[in-house]
Image 1: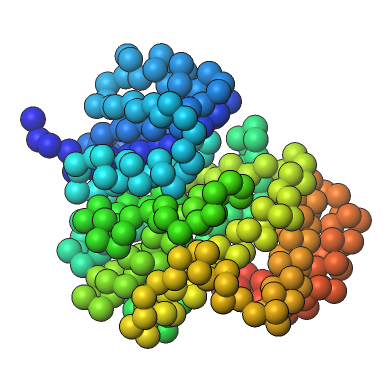
Image 2: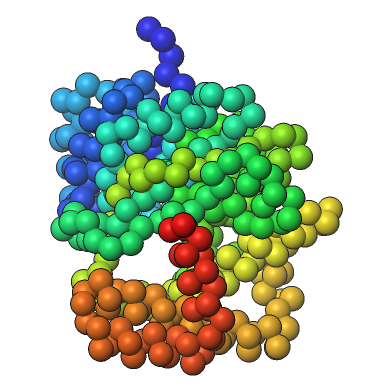
Length: 328
């Protein structure tokens, strides 16, 4: 039997409503030469039971690992990264849906050139009932020229979670960062943990290595639009983590060592904190406006958009420019 080169890993936590649909989408791929790893992060619902019942009769090589206590996304992904033995790996969220050719297209692309170390794709949004809604995620360098330009200029390399990557380079880059964070909530190591690793993997551009995105929607990203559930605190925490990742990227380009997250927080000046306050509030109201627009609450949409502009007019301008470029 030919040894499989790819592991698809799902970090599972309380996804009983969606995990069967996710597994259906993965087990019906046009590319079937992969192993499946399920990391159950101490789910408190029926997620694990559903997975066990589903897979015991499935025609796929799989493994289920269950943590005895909740460890978080970064820990689970880092465990999986070092636990498996395959050359290639891809993480898939427990509530998203893969199009049938997701794995085939990503696998063929990464195999087309030995210098490609990661390949991602675009996504389209679906709601909690799996219905397609407006919007999606259309990010990532599409060509090697675009990637090298961004990497050389010290810009973040955004890739969506369903990225097939070479484990060797993820491990060399340090995997998912777990140390240097404060205990308790928010659990900063679980915020933008993928972006942090892609950022460090992008350093291999100096060796001619490339990270690319196929400009095609190959999976559906589930978005909660039933309520304005995302708190301002959680968004601010996310923005803070992204600034931390970008700061370390710039440091590495200058030959300096990474800061820990706690060290980074000590470097933020009062003027930066004030600027970030306005930027973060603008981003929060812009995001809430997006939820309201999808739900056709147009008067509230206009109100939140106005608040976003008041806090930071340039944020809306930047969003408009990025969306205009994306749709050209």
